[in-house]
Amino acid sequence: MTSWTTPTDLRTQVQRLWDQGVLLRAQLHGEPLFPLALRLKRPDTKALAERFDEVRQWIRQLQAGAGHYQLDWQTINHRQLGRNQVPAGAHLDSLDAALAMLGKRREAERFAQLCRQTLAGFPELHDWLTRHPLRALEQAEHWSKVMAVLDWFRAHPHSGLYLRQLDIAGVDSKFIEQRRGLLGELLDRVLQAEALDAEARGVRGFSRRYGLRDKPLLVRLRILDPRLYINGLSDLSAPVEQIAQLELDLERVFVTENETNALAFPAHERALVILGQGYALERLGEIPWLHRQPLHYWGDIDTHGFAILDRLRAHLPQAKSLLMDRDTLLEHQVLWGQEPADKRCSANLGRLTNAEQMLYRELRDDHLGERLRLEQEHVRFGWLQQALDSLPV
Image 1 (tube, rainbow, N blue to C red):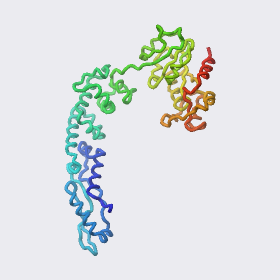
Image 2 (image 1 turned 45 degrees about the vertical axis):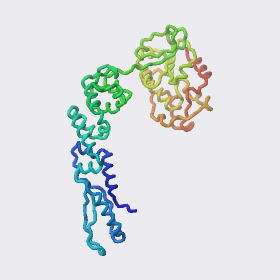
Image 3 (image 1 turned 120 degrees about the horizontal axis):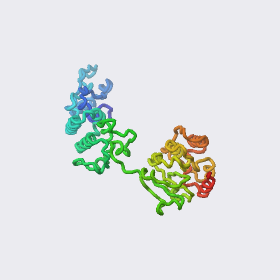
Image 4 (image 1 turned 30 degrees about the vertical axis):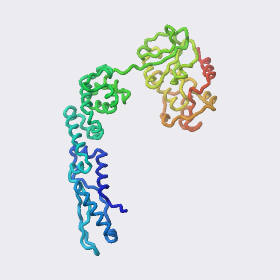
């Protein structure tokens, strides 16, 4: 076996250009890509003398594969073999030759048609098409629908409709939901800045970012004092805007991210517990009466738990930690576990107290053990009750 370039190797080089979007980009952008030289590893002088039959077979193989690619020849005067023509390189004369070599002419024409359609209505997408030609080509069958969606959003900024309510011919809400990532990239380029909610990002923020009404964020809470039940109800889930209207005679609020802990939280006079999971935690600051209450956050004792506490204080600065201290950690040593590596926080958290900061750094720097954590559900309820009893009245 030799390491000399074969017709298959040449095709692989051109295929790589297709896979990288280079050929489609050249078609769109008018890049001076051709003639395009291909890499050709060829026999050296020693091989010509010692393996001449193999060299002739290699030459015949390259000639047989030629047609789409062209060979560049070099005349070699060999002391023993005389004058011989040997391939010195290979090249493609044109984009059409490259496409024909790969059997991609139809796809390229489809992409060209897609670009004409797109740029006629959205010239600002030229740069995106240049950067992502294969992504566009993957959606070619549905591209007319993609354009219809862009048209609708451009004509209806800040519509305030639910996604299900959009009336776009031939397009249903599932089509948009399945392509929110792609549509988001395109809408960011098509819409004016004032039509976007800059604080909403990613797939989860699609509706808010582009002026749609998002499904209401529900906040779940348990009232811990039977005297404060609302028509006998103690466990409530409601949009944050409605929770903000509650008027309860409270003196304390607890927040936890663990649902089991929220459900099993002990009775406590004039108090309630909020299940503050994910994005709901960010919205708690919109509830006016939370700013007027002593508030306690109970989370895992690990770097992620302290990062959540730090984030909560950005919205509710008066929040105090509950059972996130060294005494609680050491009391439950037999229940220690390991924090998932992808959840760990290594940032500097500027809203922690001195004691919290010291414990956070010990956990972050693995001073107490590798990726040490104590999950909140492992804390004994007797220990919890003791902590609750010692809270100032």
